[in-house]
Amino acid sequence: MTQIKGVIPAMMTFFDKEENVDIQCTRRMVDFMLDHGADGFYLTGSTGECFTMTAEERNLVVDTVIDQVKGRVPVIVHVGDIGTKKSIELAKHAYEAGADAISSVPPFYWKFRADDIYSYYKDISEATPLPMVVYNIQLAGLMDMGLLLKLADLPNVHGLKYTARSHDEMGYLKEKLGSDFMIYSGCDEMAFSGMCAGADGIIGSFYNLFPDLYKKILAKVEASDIKGGMRLQKIADEVIFAALKYDFPSVLHGMMNWRGLESGYSRKPFYNYEDSELTGLKEEILRIKEK
Ligand code: NAY
Image (cartoon, rainbow, N blue to C red; front, side, top):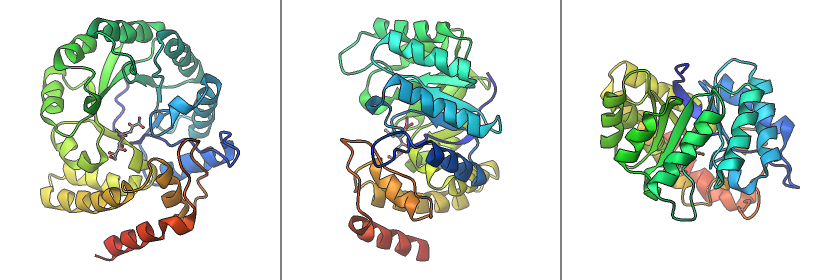
């Protein structure tokens, strides 16, 4: 597949106060992230609140972002859902809209067998010519190494997004699957070590907010500057740990507003903070910046 690398925001979905997808806000946010170094976009994933959205709304986000990006960077569309048929429809739309790749979490909620999960990815990846990035949320424990390797053998599966608190398996997979198979590190707290373990890129929520900081972290990896990379990652982590004391991803809207962005709202049942409720977080982050 096209080698999609670098800092890739798992883009938030920007709703207006009435919970409609805010198209103008979405366009502004695309430009903000591109101006601050985003190397691609990952749409309608969990940070994008996809499971609160209808297929039409998800498609609207895809159309809007692709239109705004105008080919400047690649766009990966998360098409995950519980039903294969629903995911295939989202995948077909992504293909027609001009996406560069699709991606999916495994089907969830019910306990599916490994064979069912395999069929899910097979069916979706065969539904369009687009490369598929399998999204392994290891924290959910749905896919083991045997299944991941089997999935990687499917003709259209060309990448793996690996969200885990350790990098041993990710490094092993990168080594085994080779340079053309894209591996993405999915924990923003561990971007630097993920890249050191061999990832090709990073996909995550906080790259909505400061892709520029993560560009610097990736530059440190490139320069083999371990101390410099660790120092920047530590700054990012302090901000992330402070933010994660609040409801997520809605807290991100508040944080983006501080950058003067008017980034809209999360959708219910996510809680939207009043700015006054985030004063403590703002002060904590200012202290981190001053250090
Ligand atoms: C998506 O689909 O939105 C993502 O890829 C989100 C990735 C995030 N992982 C989870 C489990 O939500 O960016 C991370 C995460 O928010 C970050 O590391 C903070 O823990």
